[in-house]
Image 1 (spheres, rainbow, N blue to C red):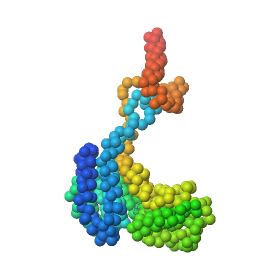
Image 2 (tube, protein in one colour):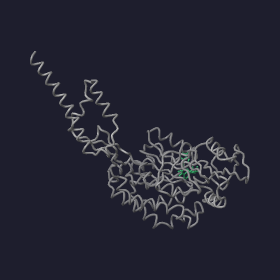
Image 3 (cartoon, rainbow, N blue to C red):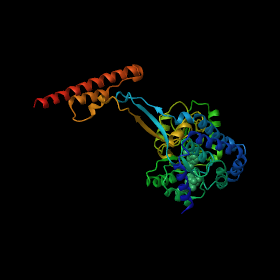
Image 4 (tube, protein in one colour):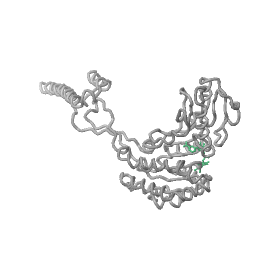
Length: 428
Ligand code: NAD
């Protein structure tokens, strides 16, 4: 049996013990992950230095501080996120308990990319742990030193059966993709994203695809060009332009350099320190240009207007929407599907189970659904299904009283009918 298959089977076995379900366990694991990030900061930044030549201060700034924030949030909010979520009832379910119960999905596969190897690999893991899942973590082989640190050190902190780290390249990832998972969370380019989705479809496994693309940046002539240039330059050249949400090209009434829309640089994500600038005649021309292309991961607008589609939109700045846990982070169309960060990560890796708990009483109200179907019953059904009543405003007790009256009337009609039938039988 392959190493990859063994890891998945071990994780499934651990999940089936049920130990990842109690909130205490999840919080314990999240706190251990937090300890790992703090205690192993040097191992993390040394690996990043070797992999990507990232600076010592850049490591907390762009990789681990965000993780710590997400862990703290999950620890503090977990009880709230995991609690049953009551939903609005209709007339038919007024006396029932109707709620959404987040449940763990099972075993999640997390496939990370190399450009922010800690942020994009561990952040989905936080969501997976918080949601009560097991997770197989597959860091990118391109950031090999980081991958090794994860493989060697994470098991010292986390439940190693529940959260195994599998290292390797394309063959190992493909072997993993042959296995059955309950969710696959992939970060990387769109070409591999399609392969991941294809593999997932064999088991009808849902996927989250965090992809990239060409994030446009529109500068209107009314904006403060000095500030816009400073913020765009920071957004573009952070991590050497290798950021999934880096502004990819600029649409500017100010002509700096003309780039033809069909130039090669405008066909694929650049993912490097090049910033083409395209001249447009105004906002409508810019919108048309953006909408003619694949849906990007982010859209930057240094102006007031927004009539386009993208994973996220940010006005008058770059990248910082990634840092807001209260916003869903994710793509649309060619830039991906699904979202995460904060509660969105928890929900993404949970099964949001719809629950309705009925009592055995109030059977009168149910008469309308049992055969024989009559015009009268259809009238009652129409009333119950189509009547929009603001239950909160009318008051629950008043509505229950109304229901009881309706149930009694329906029941009485039924009893009278039965009695008549009985009487007729006796006379015969
Ligand atoms: P990568 O080369 O590290 O690949 C990502 C993962 O895919 C790796 O774990 C790798 O093993 C696996 N993989 C590669 N080829 C495969 C194949 N043929 N079959 C199965 N698995 C395979 O990363 P990358 O794709 O070069 O990453 C850069 C891209 O990721 C850019 O497009 C960037 O925009 C995007 N990205 C997106 C986000 C986001 O949050 N949306 C974050 C970071 C990067």
